Image (cartoon, rainbow over all chains, first blue to last red):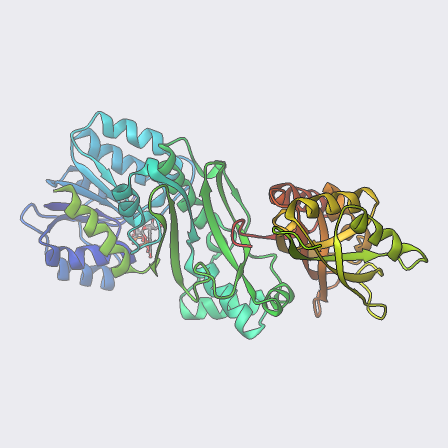
Length: 313
Length: 173
Ligand SMILES: NC(=O)c1ccc[n+]([C@@H]2O[C@H](COP(=O)([O-])OP(=O)(O)OC[C@H]3O[C@@H](n4cnc5c(N)ncnc54)[C@H](OP(=O)(O)O)[C@@H]3O)[C@@H](O)[C@H]2O)c1
């Protein structure tokens, strides 16, 4: 397949880097200010070098990428709330011209799911978005395999940054600010960690899971969200005295979707450590399924993206 | 006088330190056909609310045991834990906030306000260097099927007192 990759951050770069290994050609690649287009396949190494040296992937206009020849658009621009701009417009442009779309960007799927499905219904192209929930973990294709109507609940640790902070606080008795600074030094937390520690990122993933399981109707506003900034070390100590710990858990049930710090036994399946993620599915005929692994990272997320591309064929 | 479906049961009660209290707690057991095996009256130790914990072992059918539990509640005796499935549920929560200034003993009493939960265990820690903030771990013993109701109560009390709650995963208590 010919891919148009929108976004040249960790995810976009890893997708163009691995596309060839998966048997695909990158015919367009764009960042916020530039694009490089070639129907026979762009020179990936040159584009990445160009990005490293001058901050742009090429010399074309970003809009050129949308007008290029491609079979599937990979949406890896920043996740934004509300109208999910510019990701949503990119998806629209692709579907309206009957091309497929694979998203890593959570914004359109969490905030405008019903609009996306409506565009898809009028298009010969289809959408996939495995990478939007828990990175490399095949949560959505597992739900797809079971049949969404037979999945009665989903819960899990959906944000590696918050999980890293809680794990460090609990094991070393350190306070939130201290661990956050450390996480920023390690590159585990962004300079602005709000999305992660206030639960927004996990809530977007819950909205996506809820949309998939309940057939639409959810956005961020429908998720009850609480972050980890109010959890002091003393609460973690009390939990530990009792063989328990605290994890930021996202949960989708028939009653709705919520994200918040929850008390779990220390050796509980959901009490994964560090930046690990886990998704637990409750199914009608097959009991519980637990899928754990890396929830973020360029190559990890690209693995989910390219897996989706392969499923389009 | 053991019967085929008789089983051993343990009741943990909480008594006020007054004369006649123990007798008041034991008569509903005998009156409803419970066969008393042992009574452990921990005079020295006190529950978080300053009451005396008493553990009673008895033998009777599950059905009679239900009647005994009902009769005890009717008599106003606080049951911390009963081993039958009916009371077999427990729930731990963490509360964080200004627990001391918002009247801790009132908070604990309020947590039992839904009538189907009792505070079985309680620990408090004060945060170093953070004025006013403390954390508590509360274990509630709950009637079977009332977990959601008890949790609602915890949320309400916490909201009233501006405390934050770390809830357990229900079904994973
Ligand atoms: N990183 C992960 O592990 C992970 C996991 C799952 C999902 N995701 C999602 O995947 C998406 C990409 O993540 P990331 O970590 O790669 O983000 P990132 O590092 O912030 O990169 C975003 C890229 O999008 C480009 N961009 C911004 N506006 C654009 C526009 N209008 N047209 C074309 N390109 C535009 C940016 O251009 P400039 O380079 O010019 O600024 C940048 O290259 C996000 O939505 C994220 O939430 C990420």
